[in-house]
Image 1 (tube, rainbow, N blue to C red):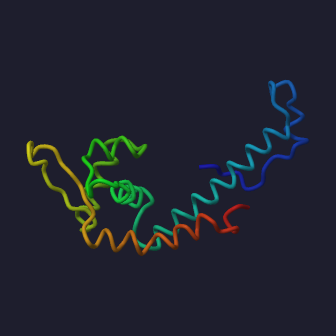
Image 2: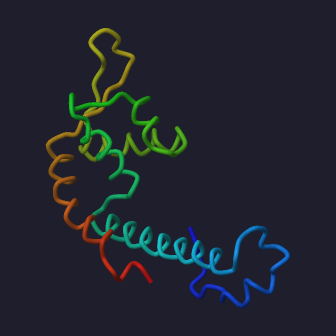
Image 3: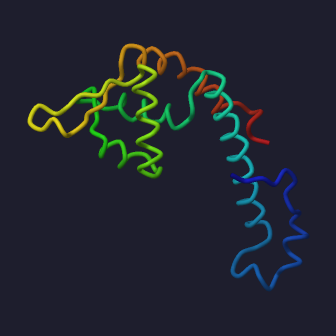
Length: 145
């Protein structure tokens, strides 16, 4: 998360000319501005999901399962491959989604030790109810400053 509310000026950055390497103060300020915008947008996304009783991670798990074209489930390992969080965090979050009745867990026909996860009707409804607001938060101009 990027916490600077007021970015350094290009003049301040340029005072460190010897440390800039091949970059200009304007290039560095541009990247800092992008980081600030992304940080504000992420906070807005987090607040949106919190107001709907979900975390962004829970939403992302629902999304990666929902976006499958040829099936309505994913194995744990496939979810882990698609989301960049630690396995303990992912395991706890998936368990919470199962407890909240947003995911159903079932075994593979050939090997019941393999866990597969699919959205329940509640999970599908929750996801569908969040999409328009999520896209609105992403596109909101209020998030870009």
